[in-house]
Image (cartoon, rainbow, N blue to C red; front, side, top):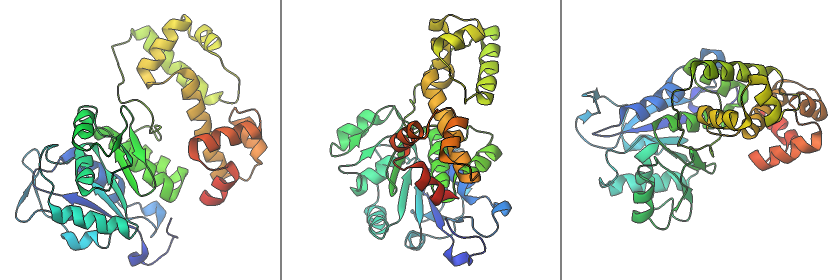
Length: 324
């Protein structure tokens, strides 16, 4: 993260690609998360620019016409490049763009694709031998056209610190928030999510396929109350049996309804929420690791370290040093 009060030129520059036939939702996600000013962060927030990769007038989905901040020269300066959904999975990618992305990657620029934007990264060759994902409608085509890529089905986003790909449009929000969390920490990412009125963190491994049939009104109300109650009682032990008794459902019904609402089991949901609470406590307080573990429901520092290492590949102590 760039320190508050730093010169504008040293703030990280996020550049989003624009092209004829631009996908407006994915483009808007990038603008909303990286391009809006954040006065509460002083002078430390990202700089933002839009780079045209086509010459002439750019027309976006919905009849919108675009003016941009520049062209390929912006890619030479970017710290992060965002590739919105491409104009078509089968549409050719200009070699000039592929070359510019390879050069950016070579100098350490972070590259992010949203939805079918993965086909741009794939065409550049940068994903060969790497894990990547995209919207579930395109995963088979991505696998067939680019067999050197390790296509991961049914996740929200995947990648390392320099190359990241996300699934369908809304998953781009999750990936961009993940980037903010990596750059600025949990509290800032949560504030951005709050302004968006979205869930602050969805695990990248969460499924794309959420079956959401209309729940009976009483069941829906009881589940909402259960989520509220669990957030207030994360430190306590919970089981499927105890939760089903609390909402007055059978264990099978609760498990099914819980999956429909969240895409994960109650145990997985509790783990994610406890990890999130632990992250917040580590970055915002100086209480001991043992106390963080107890407050967030892990029971012991060793259990917290185990799950933290497994989920984030970092220890709680190292996380505290990085984000405090």
